[in-house]
Length: 485
Image 1 (cartoon, rainbow, N blue to C red):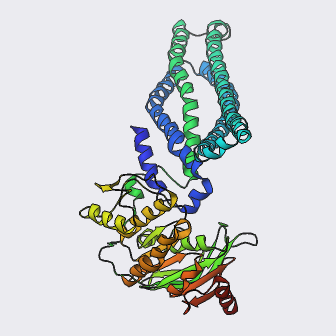
Image 2 (image 1 turned 135 degrees about the horizontal axis):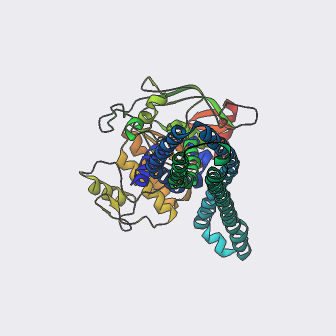
Image 3 (image 1 turned 180 degrees about the vertical axis):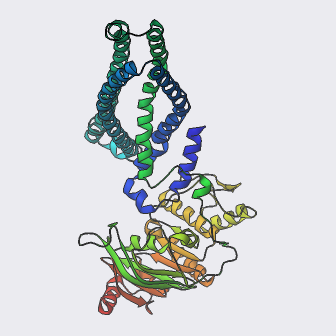
């Protein structure tokens, strides 16, 4: 139950973590957090009640021993300090090993991801496949096994050392103390029986230490993602009263926006986007062009609110966008990313007429013979890449938001679907008063746009109105933009 609760809570908090933080950690690390780390924390939490009870027994026993004889009790404390220092040395070694094992576990998850996503490439090349299995998977698995075994040995040695000290203490009380001090036989008997009674709680406490340490390492990894174990109620964000059905398309304005992948700000060696001034009005159709690495995809993530600018200001309908209302801002955009993901259900949409509206759009996208929508569920997503991209467009249409952003949507479409996209779908969105931004290299359709914006090395080097010539080639557009830059 605890693991289920933690998994559900952390999944909710992952959706509220900044995209940059998630990108830096990578999917394999996130998967390890949501599986292994959640289980480790849950097991550690289960140890807390028993640890509390056994700890109380040990404290009570220590108080009773002190009441029997302060002299012997001080000797017991001195011996326990020696044992504690030795245990700490072994514990610190084991902690480092467990931490390293957690890193190896994350690497193993990364190899599992490579296995599932690169299975075709592995099957096509025997040398690559054998090297992957031996050098990556097997090597990492053996390293993980070795680290866990050595860490377990450290704790076994520490446990054995503690038991040795306890039995040595009993022997000293029975054989040495009577020769050094004059004590009633009842006190010696009380000491021996109390120490024997304390041994089981003490072993129980020591036995929970590895579980607690694994929980501590897991907790550090969870917090390393920018997450915390606060309640869902405390983590929830408000939607600022956003209702897409009633919201009018506002104007979007950028002023001096700058973004860098260096968290400390723009540096000499880091990629920097900006400063960028940009405006997207209702009914605008804007084409974004530029070479690879020019900043187009970064611009899109900033545009839709997935990245936070380090300098400058973004305003939506005159409202400045900050961390407190960034999620509200994101709800104004329907996006199809270049690396889009298709959910099997049409989640979060108005259910009353969803199936019928979805079937209508499927006919428009020539997918009605491939896919059916029943009770908000797609009958299949096992389609060609071009068909899957059209299915992603279906979700965007059903969202019916003020702004639409398409990142290389037509890159893998057949010529007839490109024609439909540029000459029918985009103009329809513009006529409905939507603000539309399209990343594209299809220069034959540039004349349909209200503006063409060209990026190079993170900066807008020119902005050009739609061409009067419907077939104006890209190199002539580039010359116009370069002359204006």
